[in-house]
Image 1 (cartoon, rainbow, N blue to C red):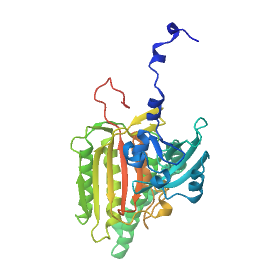
Image 2: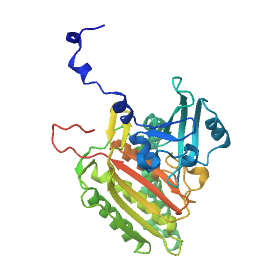
Image 3: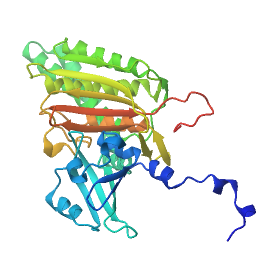
Image 4: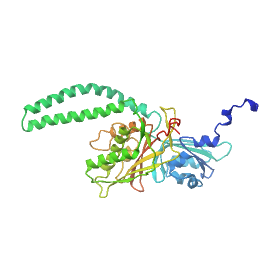
Length: 369
């Protein structure tokens, strides 16, 4: 056994079990033999939308159910281990797709540790997968632009010499070439590996600019409600990229409610303490306490597409190319943020949540502080 003189100061200050559990990025829930919640960490409170005080004593299946019958049966068997991937749980009346594990505690028969981690948009490897998916088409797109420029030039020249209906055809060619070029530009932006340059910025300025842009295009037909926390500190983001993210999300919400009799879009900001995500490219966890939520009371995304809406070339719109939300995800990730989607079936609301890091107060503070 080492003598006290050989124990370093770093050993004395090592985090204990409680600190390690609180630092986990996935939700951890301790249940007793009767499936009652005994202990939770901060990530579990965030995921389930309830405080530890309200979670303790609740039956796990009643708390996150209804579940797949096979999962529910396995959980009801004492001392049964379980690994369930991409299952649906209910979290504060909101459906979420998660990976679930149940680990029996040998020292305490019947007791188990449950972990929950959200599936999808912020898992490790998504950025690399996205870049590889878009990379090859992006290179090809560069080569396509040259002949498109020649076609556009020829159409403009023809428009000057033609008359009547033929002029409209030449103009249509020009417009379609421009549309294809814009699509190619978005594909190239998706394939870019250069992250956005971030600095301190006021989130409400970006939100108000985005709302003004959407309102100008919509001419005020859809009500956009602002619910801002005026005390929010600056976020660490790229102002232009953040505005683009918000314009896309608010425009999508507006489109979703455009046919509703009383369509509403709500943009809300708040401070969420304790929320953190693992930024794989940074090699550490980053706290993301600034939350921007865009909600709408439209019909929501087709359930069969909900797990894929941030993937490229996936769209629920008849004329959509499926690049808008893929670009949104990339821009948010480039700012070391997180984006998620959820459907509140009880309130018939669709929500997109963007979480961003705080700007550094001074040079001595770390980004994750």
